[in-house]
Length: 408
Image 1 (tube, rainbow, N blue to C red):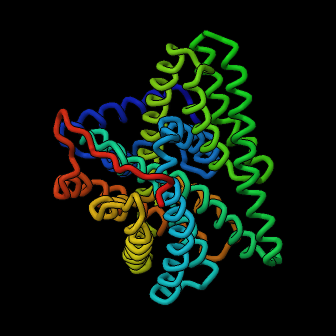
Image 2: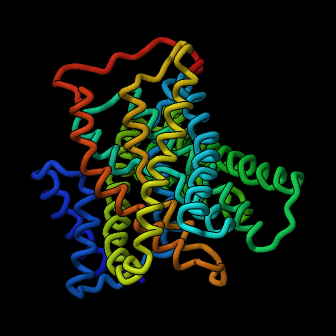
């Protein structure tokens, strides 16, 4: 349970870690995971347990909303097709490849392997985006990383839901799967549009920036919870809602002062939520430490399989656009590959597995291990890779934008 004292302690730790990480030129998310692990190792109790309910009900809505709020539709539209291809085809292929690897190399049964493949295939670019901000990386690369991650979160959650129903013994046919997908995707988009439209209508009738912030808060959580209540995709609902408010809201629904206040509020909210998540990931890693010893082999196999699957998927799919009006630069593809970190959604899906599911503990433990590896190893090496590829912008320069239309 959260209390004011516990929140204050965790935020104090997060602030201090962020300061130290900046001096050491490390992603602060890496420092938070290490700090959380250290707290647990020293026997210092945070009093907060990372659960599916906590991640889904409190953490995911603001994270998805904040990321969508800052994406410009006119820029996203140019790269929407590549982002959709990477998110849909990429997640589906990565799920299959990861499942096959865990089945044949780690000896996991197919249901267990498929569930793990689905939940671990969605990427979380929080650490990478933090590095982008520090290194002043903007433009198309940042847009591709954020857009693909937001879209593949929704796709992974939908695929995972279908697989859980299958593993739980529900009879699935092409028709039922099609209906489920239509409900998840179509319902999520519809709830996002409805919530966003309602908030824009209300926001246009006030000039109070505090009220405008309140409306966006209701939009972030309301769109997610409403869609989840009706068994639709909360991630897609909040994504659509955030895009609406971040783009249509600039046409007059929000005042200039309100828009500045909303942006500042959500930037801080994202920092707070990310701080709590990565601290608690570190605490949970320590709690699962005993299981890591017995699952060392599957964990190593999973890290290798997940990483290779990401590469096998990203490079060919990106190559599809080599002849298009907006080809994806090779150095950008390298970042899309190595920057495909795993995070909150993977853990939420793993923790939400049915209690009676065979091999549930193994899936959760290995998922936490893969997330820790991606955040620490890939996150720490990202500044070096950006510098090696010449993607760190010098003061006074901007990344050139390619002309094109719809990414094809």
